[in-house]
Length: 343
Ligand code: FES
Image (cartoon, rainbow, N blue to C red):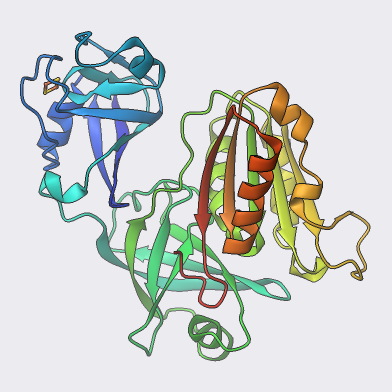
């Protein structure tokens, strides 16, 4: 049996390798050309330390001087002593350049479909070219797509789980955006789109608390990938609430897909929220924070993931600060509305 392992670094790059059953993580990384820093290889010096963000693992020996009980509780680990027991993701607090690695790579895909899924949103489907076994990425990460006919690139979160030979991206159609104009005016099935991936550090960590996901507009894209992966694994063992905020009801998209996911993921609920008070809409109105359950978040530890435009992310951060929720872990990704490039 082999497991797929992601290594994320402080510079936002992610590298992948396969780990054999019972193989030490450090050995697997070195075999794949990922030269993680190391020294003693005996669990003492802590040079090879990182943190397991998701997945199951064991460690052979960890010296008290290398990692404390508190470190271990935070899932810090030593690569030279770690054996993974499932697919897993690890984080290292240094740049990937320390590992002699080139990081994200250039690929290309062919347009296989373009669906208009709301007044303001399209889903671009790309068929991967020259990548046997699909592209390695973590749901929540993004790719930088070159806009055909230009030398400009734009960034979009993957809207589906990895594993197949098709990539999906939710794209907000702007009145005059370079990608929007291409999709509206020139895009044809068969067009070749070069892209760089995977990029970004916004991905689902180890789930051991209730999850609150907050999407603003096409920020939904990152969560569709996470939820698809969760569904494929039969859930995550915790309640999952997705708040999905848009300005107008016509901007909502992929509701049927979310509905299907709610049948597949135990304890998953999604709550669409429309901010325009005048909109013809029978569901929840206003801002997402008007509907978040502060009392529930105060009563039990929780993880919150936010992906959307900067003002929305800031409003969620301000709201959390105002509630003094000390046991909430926050992860967020901001993207600029004008270009949908992540910042
Ligand atoms: S290399 Fe020293 S603890 Fe792993």
